[in-house]
Image (cartoon, rainbow, N blue to C red; front, side, top):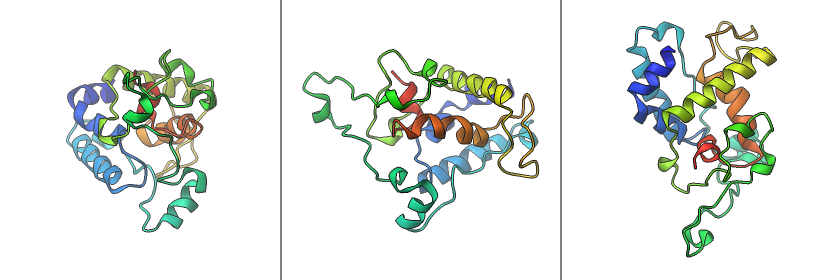
Amino acid sequence: QELRAFAEQHPQLVSKLAATTPGTEACKAASDDFQRALDAWPFAARVRVPPKMPATSTASEADAHLGAADAPGAERGDTSQAAAGSTGTPVRPDTSKVPSWFRRLVPPAGGCLVEDAALRALTIPQLVSVFELGEELCEAHEWQHTVGPRKGQRILKGELNLYSLMHYLAEPATVGARCSLAELVID
């Protein structure tokens, strides 16, 4: 509830963070801005937003972290207006490779690829839906903390954070479709 209240009060920060590509300076800056805003809230001691992945200085280091097929700049498909045709029909991600447990969040039309990362934003209801799915899966599959002093310990009800959500839900859901989380859930 507290995270939802924060998200409703800071939609620009939420959208900015959701639209970034892991490992980029934009991602680090968005994570830092988001964390500074969280630190000002009363529940700040219980919420941390670690970076999505370590900053890398070379393409080969990024490849080693992500795997060559998932490296920044790897083919995402043509998202240009030319690919959409003269009708302006949106280009859709390949949702056939999205895990079945995530598909209920993908709109019937199949999401929408957005070339400009700054325009990949989730609405508050979409973000809440992602978070609720994460809470459900966290409990059902006994997810564990991946960072911090509780690393390796089970995540208890109410402890799910954005880092764990990215690790267990967003990354597995998006790797097959080769797109961002926002591109899977936006219409």
